[in-house]
Image (cartoon, rainbow, N blue to C red):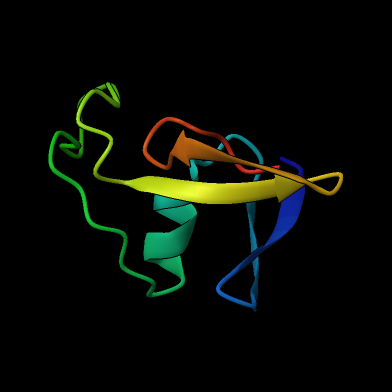
Length: 71
């Protein structure tokens, strides 16, 4: 599988493609609060407690970390 490199809180993290931001953060020891996320179930993203700001090509937006795949 392809390895993706991303930055969370100015820390460079490497993880497999298809991993969510929430899973990548957990692997790196970074805590993102959640409410509706339950390991083993399909992510729903309804509560938005895990909302994070992402930046891509100079533009930023808010996404649910439990549902959004790393890029």
